[in-house]
Image (cartoon, rainbow, N blue to C red; front, side, top):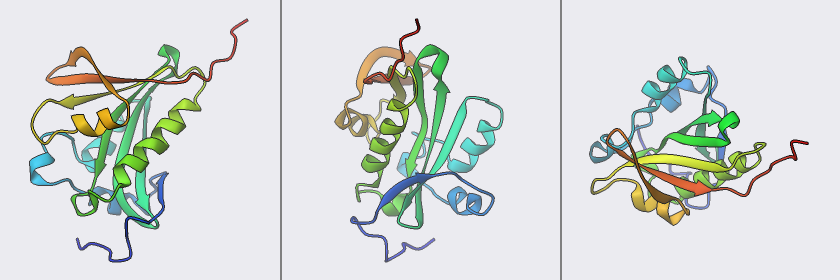
Length: 163
């Protein structure tokens, strides 16, 4: 797939539902070969999401061009949300789309009732996403999920008084 020359660093970033009309385009997104050890593809992620009631996934767009994919594991009863998958296509990395999409995702989660924390996990290898998440305020917790180190972002809660 070619880079859309109309997509620039100034393109407006949004996260949107993936529909039957946009699914194919999203499934074609891919990270570089060096990054494939860090995140599963959008196609694999959407297939896996069908088996989990708490999976919420979206396409990441720059203007009208699909440039990425994210998937959230929503656990409102536990007051936590987990960035399960997050990728920007290799053709569009380095343009700020990932950082902007992560800010949009954080804002979305903060608006969920009783959201207290946003978690993710990273493979601790060179070229991994550790620095990306640290720049957005995530901190290592010292826990591991399998081979992945857990990171947490404390959220300003939108909690209603349970009285």
